Length: 230
Image 1 (tube, rainbow, N blue to C red):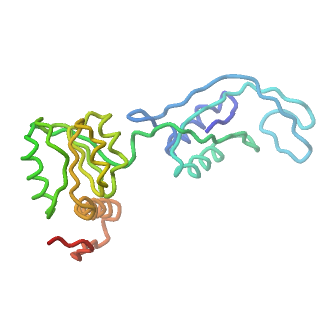
Image 2 (image 1 turned 135 degrees about the horizontal axis):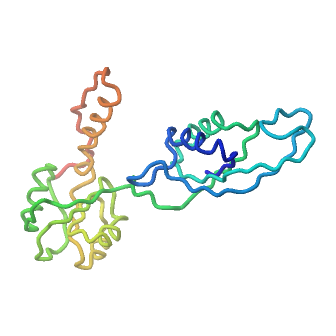
Protein backbone atom coordinates (compact mmCIF):
# COMPACT_ATOMS: atom_id res chain seq x y z
CA UNK A 1 0.00 0.00 0.00
CA UNK A 2 1.18 3.50 -0.86
CA UNK A 3 -0.33 6.65 0.61
CA UNK A 4 0.46 10.33 1.02
CA UNK A 5 0.21 12.27 4.26
CA UNK A 6 1.45 15.61 5.71
CA UNK A 7 4.91 15.10 7.10
CA UNK A 8 3.91 16.00 10.66
CA UNK A 9 1.20 13.30 10.70
CA UNK A 10 3.23 10.57 8.96
CA UNK A 11 4.35 8.85 12.17
CA UNK A 12 0.81 8.80 13.56
CA UNK A 13 -0.60 7.10 10.46
CA UNK A 14 2.31 4.65 10.27
CA UNK A 15 1.74 3.54 13.85
CA UNK A 16 -1.96 3.05 13.13
CA UNK A 17 -1.43 0.80 10.11
CA UNK A 18 1.38 -1.07 11.88
CA UNK A 19 -1.04 -1.85 14.71
CA UNK A 20 -3.45 -3.18 12.07
CA UNK A 21 -0.82 -5.63 10.77
CA UNK A 22 0.91 -3.80 7.92
CA UNK A 23 4.67 -3.60 7.52
CA UNK A 24 5.73 -7.05 8.66
CA UNK A 25 8.53 -8.80 6.78
CA UNK A 26 9.71 -12.08 8.25
CA UNK A 27 11.05 -11.43 11.75
CA UNK A 28 10.79 -7.66 11.34
CA UNK A 29 7.76 -5.44 11.88
CA UNK A 30 7.01 -1.71 11.50
CA UNK A 31 8.74 -1.83 8.09
CA UNK A 32 8.08 1.07 5.70
CA UNK A 33 9.76 3.21 3.08
CA UNK A 34 9.24 6.97 3.18
CA UNK A 35 9.97 9.72 0.66
CA UNK A 36 9.35 13.42 1.25
CA UNK A 37 7.91 15.61 -1.47
CA UNK A 38 5.36 18.27 -2.35
CA UNK A 39 1.65 17.58 -2.64
CA UNK A 40 -0.70 19.99 -4.42
CA UNK A 41 -4.49 20.34 -4.35
CA UNK A 42 -7.28 22.89 -4.48
CA UNK A 43 -10.38 22.56 -2.32
CA UNK A 44 -13.76 23.53 -3.76
CA UNK A 45 -16.61 25.20 -1.89
CA UNK A 46 -18.00 21.88 -0.61
CA UNK A 47 -14.68 20.78 0.90
CA UNK A 48 -13.50 20.96 4.48
CA UNK A 49 -9.71 21.11 4.01
CA UNK A 50 -7.33 20.17 6.81
CA UNK A 51 -4.78 22.61 5.37
CA UNK A 52 -5.10 25.28 2.68
CA UNK A 53 -7.99 27.54 1.76
CA UNK A 54 -11.00 26.88 -0.41
CA UNK A 55 -10.52 27.94 -4.01
CA UNK A 56 -6.75 28.30 -3.70
CA UNK A 57 -4.02 25.94 -4.86
CA UNK A 58 -2.20 24.63 -1.81
CA UNK A 59 1.29 23.09 -1.68
CA UNK A 60 1.92 20.81 1.29
CA UNK A 61 5.08 19.07 2.50
CA UNK A 62 4.02 15.44 2.39
CA UNK A 63 5.47 11.98 2.92
CA UNK A 64 4.89 9.08 0.57
CA UNK A 65 4.66 5.98 2.75
CA UNK A 66 5.01 2.46 1.33
CA UNK A 67 4.26 -0.72 3.29
CA UNK A 68 3.48 -4.33 2.48
CA UNK A 69 0.62 -6.31 3.98
CA UNK A 70 -1.10 -9.68 3.48
CA UNK A 71 -4.28 -9.57 1.41
CA UNK A 72 -6.56 -10.70 4.25
CA UNK A 73 -5.60 -7.60 6.30
CA UNK A 74 -6.37 -5.12 3.53
CA UNK A 75 -9.69 -3.87 4.95
CA UNK A 76 -8.30 -3.56 8.49
CA UNK A 77 -5.23 -1.63 7.35
CA UNK A 78 -7.27 0.68 5.13
CA UNK A 79 -9.67 1.37 8.00
CA UNK A 80 -6.72 2.23 10.24
CA UNK A 81 -5.29 4.56 7.61
CA UNK A 82 -8.54 6.41 6.98
CA UNK A 83 -9.29 6.83 10.69
CA UNK A 84 -5.82 8.16 11.50
CA UNK A 85 -5.28 10.33 8.42
CA UNK A 86 -6.07 14.06 8.78
CA UNK A 87 -7.19 14.63 5.18
CA UNK A 88 -10.83 14.63 4.15
CA UNK A 89 -9.85 12.81 0.95
CA UNK A 90 -6.99 10.34 1.47
CA UNK A 91 -4.79 9.54 -1.52
CA UNK A 92 -3.76 5.88 -1.41
CA UNK A 93 -3.09 2.97 -3.78
CA UNK A 94 -2.88 -0.81 -3.40
CA UNK A 95 -0.51 -2.79 -5.62
CA UNK A 96 -0.56 -6.57 -5.94
CA UNK A 97 2.93 -8.03 -5.48
CA UNK A 98 4.30 -11.34 -6.72
CA UNK A 99 6.82 -11.63 -3.92
CA UNK A 100 7.20 -15.03 -2.28
CA UNK A 101 5.87 -14.98 1.26
CA UNK A 102 8.10 -17.28 3.30
CA UNK A 103 5.70 -17.21 6.22
CA UNK A 104 3.16 -19.45 4.57
CA UNK A 105 2.84 -22.05 1.86
CA UNK A 106 2.24 -25.72 1.21
CA UNK A 107 4.66 -28.15 2.77
CA UNK A 108 7.32 -27.89 5.46
CA UNK A 109 10.97 -28.77 5.75
CA UNK A 110 13.14 -29.44 8.77
CA UNK A 111 16.07 -31.41 10.11
CA UNK A 112 16.33 -34.34 12.48
CA UNK A 113 18.48 -33.97 15.56
CA UNK A 114 20.25 -37.19 14.65
CA UNK A 115 20.79 -38.74 11.23
CA UNK A 116 19.09 -42.07 10.59
CA UNK A 117 19.55 -44.77 7.98
CA UNK A 118 17.07 -44.67 5.11
CA UNK A 119 15.44 -48.04 5.71
CA UNK A 120 15.14 -47.35 9.45
CA UNK A 121 13.50 -44.03 8.70
CA UNK A 122 11.02 -45.66 6.33
CA UNK A 123 10.14 -48.23 8.96
CA UNK A 124 9.53 -45.48 11.50
CA UNK A 125 7.31 -43.69 8.97
CA UNK A 126 5.24 -46.82 8.46
CA UNK A 127 4.67 -47.20 12.18
CA UNK A 128 4.07 -43.50 12.91
CA UNK A 129 1.56 -43.01 10.10
CA UNK A 130 0.11 -46.51 10.36
CA UNK A 131 0.73 -46.84 6.65
CA UNK A 132 -0.15 -50.23 5.17
CA UNK A 133 2.22 -49.67 2.29
CA UNK A 134 4.94 -47.16 1.47
CA UNK A 135 6.02 -46.65 -2.13
CA UNK A 136 9.53 -45.28 -2.37
CA UNK A 137 12.33 -44.72 -4.85
CA UNK A 138 15.67 -46.52 -4.90
CA UNK A 139 17.62 -46.08 -1.69
CA UNK A 140 20.52 -43.68 -2.09
CA UNK A 141 22.68 -45.33 0.60
CA UNK A 142 22.74 -42.03 2.49
CA UNK A 143 21.51 -41.13 5.94
CA UNK A 144 18.33 -39.10 6.40
CA UNK A 145 18.82 -35.71 8.05
CA UNK A 146 16.86 -33.08 6.13
CA UNK A 147 13.17 -33.97 5.66
CA UNK A 148 10.54 -32.37 3.40
CA UNK A 149 6.86 -33.10 4.02
CA UNK A 150 3.61 -32.25 2.24
CA UNK A 151 0.30 -33.82 3.19
CA UNK A 152 -1.95 -35.04 0.40
CA UNK A 153 -1.03 -34.80 -3.28
CA UNK A 154 2.34 -33.10 -3.02
CA UNK A 155 4.20 -34.42 -6.04
CA UNK A 156 4.24 -30.95 -7.61
CA UNK A 157 6.64 -29.85 -4.84
CA UNK A 158 9.29 -32.44 -5.64
CA UNK A 159 11.54 -29.94 -7.42
CA UNK A 160 11.25 -27.59 -4.44
CA UNK A 161 12.25 -30.36 -2.04
CA UNK A 162 15.27 -31.13 -4.21
CA UNK A 163 16.21 -27.44 -4.40
CA UNK A 164 16.09 -27.29 -0.59
CA UNK A 165 18.56 -30.19 -0.42
CA UNK A 166 16.14 -32.47 1.39
CA UNK A 167 17.24 -36.07 1.81
CA UNK A 168 13.66 -37.38 1.65
CA UNK A 169 10.30 -36.06 0.49
CA UNK A 170 7.27 -37.50 2.28
CA UNK A 171 3.96 -37.05 0.49
CA UNK A 172 1.37 -39.01 -1.51
CA UNK A 173 -0.28 -39.68 -4.86
CA UNK A 174 2.91 -39.87 -6.94
CA UNK A 175 2.29 -41.23 -10.42
CA UNK A 176 4.54 -43.91 -11.89
CA UNK A 177 6.66 -41.63 -14.07
CA UNK A 178 7.01 -39.00 -11.35
CA UNK A 179 9.17 -41.36 -9.34
CA UNK A 180 11.78 -41.06 -12.11
CA UNK A 181 11.95 -37.30 -11.45
CA UNK A 182 13.83 -37.98 -8.21
CA UNK A 183 16.87 -38.78 -10.39
CA UNK A 184 18.65 -40.18 -7.33
CA UNK A 185 18.82 -36.63 -5.90
CA UNK A 186 16.26 -37.38 -3.21
CA UNK A 187 14.35 -40.30 -1.70
CA UNK A 188 10.60 -40.17 -2.34
CA UNK A 189 8.30 -41.78 0.22
CA UNK A 190 4.65 -42.03 -0.85
CA UNK A 191 2.86 -43.02 2.36
CA UNK A 192 -0.74 -42.61 1.13
CA UNK A 193 -3.05 -39.64 0.85
CA UNK A 194 -5.17 -40.26 3.94
CA UNK A 195 -2.18 -41.36 5.98
CA UNK A 196 -0.26 -38.17 5.18
CA UNK A 197 -3.16 -35.92 6.23
CA UNK A 198 -4.56 -37.80 9.22
CA UNK A 199 -2.89 -35.60 11.84
CA UNK A 200 -4.35 -32.40 10.40
CA UNK A 201 -7.29 -32.70 12.80
CA UNK A 202 -4.90 -32.48 15.76
CA UNK A 203 -3.44 -29.27 14.34
CA UNK A 204 -6.90 -27.79 13.83
CA UNK A 205 -7.87 -28.94 17.34
CA UNK A 206 -4.92 -27.06 18.86
CA UNK A 207 -5.77 -23.90 16.92
CA UNK A 208 -9.43 -24.02 17.93
CA UNK A 209 -8.84 -24.49 21.65
CA UNK A 210 -6.25 -21.71 21.56
CA UNK A 211 -8.55 -19.26 19.76
CA UNK A 212 -11.78 -20.38 21.44
CA UNK A 213 -10.81 -21.68 24.91
CA UNK A 214 -14.44 -21.83 26.07
CA UNK A 215 -15.56 -24.07 23.21
CA UNK A 216 -15.86 -27.82 23.68
CA UNK A 217 -13.91 -29.43 20.83
CA UNK A 218 -14.02 -33.16 20.16
CA UNK A 219 -11.98 -35.16 17.67
CA UNK A 220 -13.93 -37.42 15.36
CA UNK A 221 -13.01 -41.10 15.48
CA UNK A 222 -14.53 -41.82 12.06
CA UNK A 223 -12.07 -43.18 9.52
CA UNK A 224 -12.98 -41.65 6.17
CA UNK A 225 -10.18 -43.29 4.15
CA UNK A 226 -11.85 -44.79 1.03
CA UNK A 227 -8.78 -46.92 0.26
CA UNK A 228 -8.39 -50.45 1.58
CA UNK A 229 -5.30 -52.64 1.39
CA UNK A 230 -5.18 -56.39 0.85
